[in-house]
Length: 97
View 1 (tube, rainbow, N blue to C red):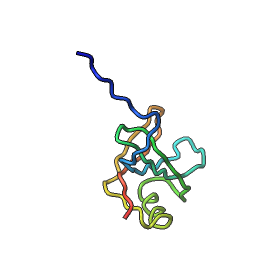
View 2 (cartoon, rainbow, N blue to C red):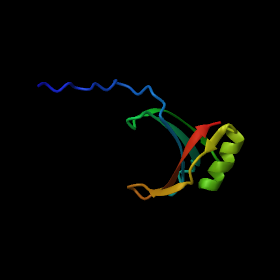
View 3 (spheres, rainbow, N blue to C red):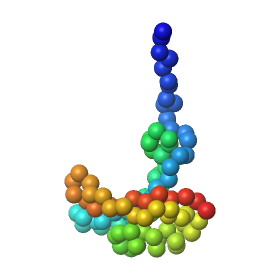
């Protein structure tokens, strides 16, 4: 019996998961921002957008979302991460109301 291969479309098209990411300017680049990512069901990035914020961290990200995108709602608590090169960042799931 020959196993049938499942082909994955070459580019993501399904909007399956949306999440916010905010950062700490650990290395003093001077770029404080929040990212909104959309991934498909396979974890591939479909799209993203970012905007600047006045300061780092989740509380400032929440404030900026309320001002910039009032119909965007965070649905999970912020989760802290540290990148491989030592930068602090936080992620949280989000949806459009």
